[in-house]
Length: 475
Image (cartoon, rainbow, N blue to C red):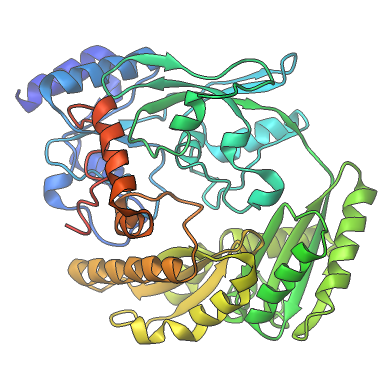
């Protein structure tokens, strides 16, 4: 099958203006935020933008007929290598045109196309008095389909909000072979027993293309914002552990910045230098009074930590927006300050080992560093959910091979730390860059189970091939 024949067939399905073979466009859709370049052989032959579930179905049926690899692209904000093509002669299927939002307040749900940006959905729901139960760091450009496909809530606390799977009533999905299925219900009573909705939420685009999401409406709640400062980063780990033990309802948002990262971020947005390492908490309640009571109880608990410096409710909207902006966009701010590219990993631990994990990230991993030993590194992340990011900023002028080796080293460290601390990766998925961790953590039987499920649904290995095998990074 020639390239020209493939392009003509795709144009026949979605229209000429929704298919491009321009090499610059193809490279941009093949890339993500991973710092090294796209491999030449993995540049897709075309980017195709279906405008309906039926068009997605026709594309996948055709891909199976002629054995063309298909890689799904929301916005390419993944930093775990998952959205990059890993096979020669592939096409990229962009969900950009699947952008419809339908509000159904009579039945208390919203139906949304997979290509809708999280920020746009958040604003739409907020306008109608509802909240989006996720706060993705890249929400300005990332898509709801991408968030659901990895089951991430981003910068929110699982114990307070739950995962997206807890709020999704149903999905429309195109299987790798082109069949269209609908899962779930339009009732607020979700299915018991076998529920294919949860089968596809978090499947990382390996088992089907999610085209439409039906999500329960959650009324917006009053919020109170708390900022705390500590003389040592480990103190924040102990303080969060104490918050849970005190039986205060978990915050919706519990974020952490080490002192150096906070210092740089505060400076870049025009804030005074922080007093120490930073803890950010957001409490919600059915009333402003209830949220305030939770926040005050939390501050009282924080004062018992020996490294406590200060904590208070943030009453100035300007201060709240600027400080929370620092955390939400700290990666971009630090990259700007350092003039480099970031590599980020995610590690977590049981609650009782949270302070130990922070200490280990500060000093314990130094002996494991090689190529990353002398580059700036920072600790930040979702401390309220016992998950943290270690972030390195590498020089932009490093060679492609050197950047790739640094990326491998970082994810080897991530694997070792998560196994050492009995944690996992709760934000951005477990395949592609993390497949070595999955195998070591869960064993061959678990990995082979995934392979069998993938083969059963995708016999020709058309959809996102190579991610489950760790191709392009570990092989």
